Length: 447
Image (cartoon, rainbow, N blue to C red):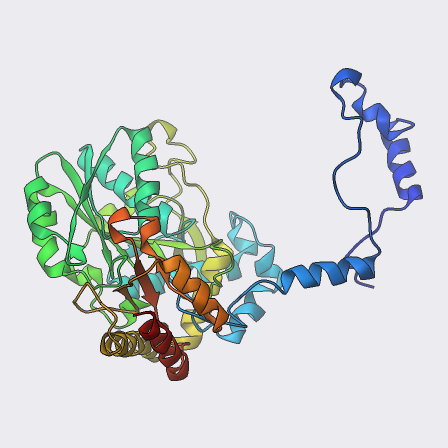
C-alpha cells in the first residue's frame, strides 16, 4: 500500500531512542543550557484532525488566483505557454525524476541522450556551434557568459543594455563584484538599446556587450546594427534570448553572436512561483573549452554502437581549480529534459507555429489597445510583449482586472521609477481572442 503520509508511532520513537542509546528525547538536548532553552508554548493553532486540516488548507489555497481560473497577461521573463501532456508523463518516470550526475555512462544512457538532444536543439534554435547541458536559469546563464568573455579577453569592463531583464542585470552585477569587473549600463532610446550611447562607451577595455533579443520590453533589438559596434576592439557579443522567439526570428548566431544564453522556461517548464527554471548556454566552436558546466558528447563503443558520455572533463570543477573561470559544476537536467520533450513533441513546425501565434496575438492586442485610446510609448517589432502607459497606477488597474478574471501585466514602475504607470503586457499563444478583447475593453475603460 502506498502512503502519502507515514505516521510515527510511540513504538517507532522508542525503537529509534533504543538504537542510539538514549532513554528520552530530552537527552538529545543536554548540551544546550537550560537558561537558553525555550520553555513556553508556541504561538500556533492547536492541532486539528486530518479532515478539519484539509478543509482549512483547501480554503486557503482556493484564495489563490492562478492560471487555471484566470487569463494571464503577466510575463516579464516567466510565461504561460502550452505544455504538451507528454512532458509531465516523461519527467515523472523514476529513472529521470531521481537521476543524478551521470558519471557512469554505462547506466546513464537515457539521461545522457536526453541531455545531448537538449544541447542539439538549443544549437539549432540559436544558430551556435556548441551548447552545454543547461544551467540554473537565464540570469545566471547570462552572468556566466559575461564572466567567460572577461576571462577570454582578459578585460575588465562589460557593457549591458538597460533593455536586458533587470533581474539578469542584478545577477550580472553580483557575479562581476567577485571578479572585480566593471558593469556599465547602456541607456534605452525608444524602447531599444541606444546605439550612439553604446558606440561612445566602446573602448579597448570592454570585454563584452550584452543585449537581449527580444528585449525586456518585448521589442526585437536590431542585432545586425549592434554586432559591428559590439565587436569593436575585439570585445565579444553576448545575446540573451527567449528560445521560443527563435522559432520565428533570425537566430543570434547568424548575426555574429559569440555567446547566446537564456532561459528554457517557455518550453515545457511551468510558471510555478518563478522557478525552478533551466538556463541554456551556447557558444562558437572557438569557446568550446571555456564553457561552464557540463557537456555531453556522442561516441561509439567498441562494437560500433552509438553511445553518450560526459565529455571535456578536464575542467575547473575537477582538476583545474587554479584556472577556474566558473564555479558552476551542476545543471538542471530534469527541467532540460522537460524542455527537450516539449520541443520534440512540438517539432520544428510546431515551434515555428507557436512562435508565430505569439507574434500575431501580441500584435493584435497592441493594435486593439491603441484603437481603444491606450498609449503605447514604444514602437518597433515585438514578439509577445509590449508596453502601455496608463493614467493611473498599474497596481490599481491590476486589482480591477483581477476582479474580471484577468491577471494583468507587469508593473514596470517596480524596476524603473521613470516607467511609473507603465505596464508590460504579455500575450502568448494560449490567450484567446475573447480574453484579449476583454483586456482591451477593461484597459480602454481606464482611460
